[in-house]
Image (cartoon, rainbow, N blue to C red):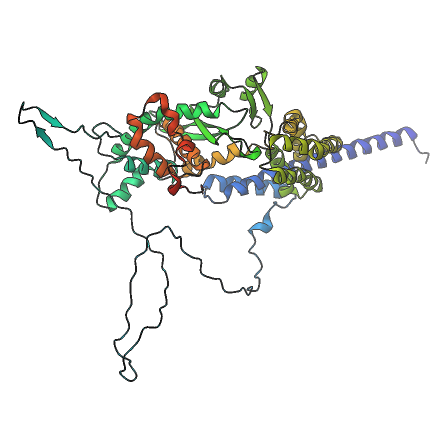
Length: 514
């Protein structure tokens, strides 16, 4: 039977088309599988340390979708119990000495008066001393201000000492109690209703509404200090910026809405700058770009931030230069490596890790030394990384997570490389992210803010507490000192109450921020 060449060609073309379609389907499924695995890995990391039925449902749906595509969910090995390891023999630990600054109470344990064996006289020839750390609950005290009235025998004039100034006019709370309420709420993350319960156990009944009034009055008193702090932060040549969502009660709608807390950090210790580190928080009802544009309206310098589009108008103005964050780039490659164990993602992490190794060496050195080291050693590494990313990007599917990570880095390359030529800049924006940690911790406890005014008060107190901690001060000691003085302090000398200007005076209360 003769072979029809035309029919064979049609069959071959049809087979090739079918094969190409099958290959395209396989590629799409592989890309979808990679995307789902990456998303699942992110959700599992979010799950750590918290319980959420909605999050559990999302994880279950992703696992079903991955199984439907014929793959195995990434990270299953993490859920499996670790293999039992033999107990490691370790040398006995020497008991650590208790802090010397704590007060001591001595309790003597006397032995018998006579020898229990023969009845002879006992002679002391030494003693054993051990220490136990005990806790004495905090206590309230009432301070009575007594002002004797005096009358002149000659003219009958009445003389009396002026009344002691109070932080809150006619208020019952002293500066120490006000500082304790503020630190407990904004540093130790105790909502006011929990504080009221704690005080009630001490036999002091303070209504939550009263505590809220105290917070509002103290915030109004501290507002000029917040303005002075902002002037200092915005006076630097470089600035770190970031934001985080906060839920705010939406009256009349029976739910909350999402507002934002913005943070701006001045941190010059990395290059030995003389200016004190400080942080300012600002509150806004939404995340529109107009807010950071208003916050930084008078700022000139370099802004180190993430890729939020709202900062674009600031860069376009020419007043502010953009410096991008290498930690964001590294995080994207880390997500891919954790979800897919991609060799290319691990290679990218290794290359970025070499940049961070240099930063660890030159941290604290003068700006010019840092710039020279970066240009000589980090510059070639950055150039090589760019060439490598461009090469691998040509071999990757445009929809893959690895291509997205590489594209993110290449799209912001000029801003990423800006730190090389300025020793005052940092390689990343971690200073701002660290400042936001306290907000993230508090957000889990207070659930939501009561109003926009509450958000503005929170921003002010977060600023003061955060700046005190950056300067190694105990926030309670700092706020108590400020609240003792600020009511009578001249407004033109308000800078004297900034944390670093009280550091020497509060030397006995210095603590490294935890």
